Length: 320
Image 1 (cartoon, one colour):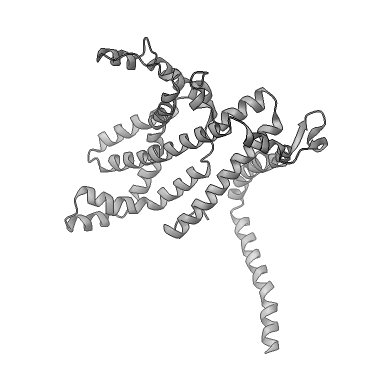
Image 2: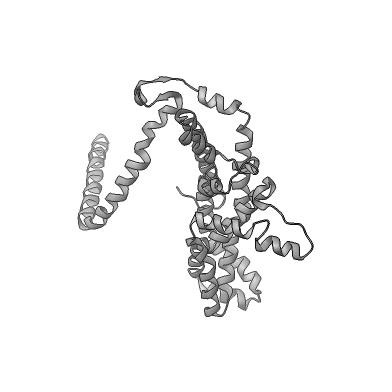
């Protein structure tokens, strides 16, 4: 019995060694692909993992003259300052509400668009619709803000001219806090829905056509086929993209918000990302805004872990 155990113990490292040798041989055969992978790995290490060393300034009173190591230790003072500030709840609510409404409203629209495009029988019209919906994705942020400024102008904007034609009074859309989130989320939907629908269209093309034929023979209507065949076929893709979206739930691209922001709509447009930019970069409070950014990232990480675990248990689909 002891000899059998000894043989098994001796065979264990040999199996690991053999597996490692096979991996090295496979890497040697496809060395060109691994060399192509080397550059993005270096990029991630240098620009994503390397800067993590600087996170310690969130717990220090960073002085550029003394450097990160020489700066005095402050502990959680910056976090306490942020949590006790009068603008904490405003920043948190604006950030969460914009992302939550975007998730509830903007996330399903590319799915609906992909289903509509895939159900159109005319291939010419289908391609035409797909092209005109994803072209806005290539409009830059500055140009997009310029378009919104022109169209929503209270004097010469087409929207207000139409409102006046129906007997209404002009609305200063960009100067009223109540309209900011609607304008921001609506313009994002118009700009990105076509581009985001491409991956769903690709997933729909992979659904087995025999499932549609079987459902049709059973008397299922088009809506029933969409509900019982199309949607279940792309559920794994929907779940993965939903997890990725929630993984950066607290992050909002500050460029567009910053360009649309003014003193009159600050109550609704001031979010964590713009506050970090204006306070950290423009005012030089690096340690304070590093603490805010770390707080933001921790929330994103917790949401990602929770949603990934929930998706793995319920939908049996997850990132890991």
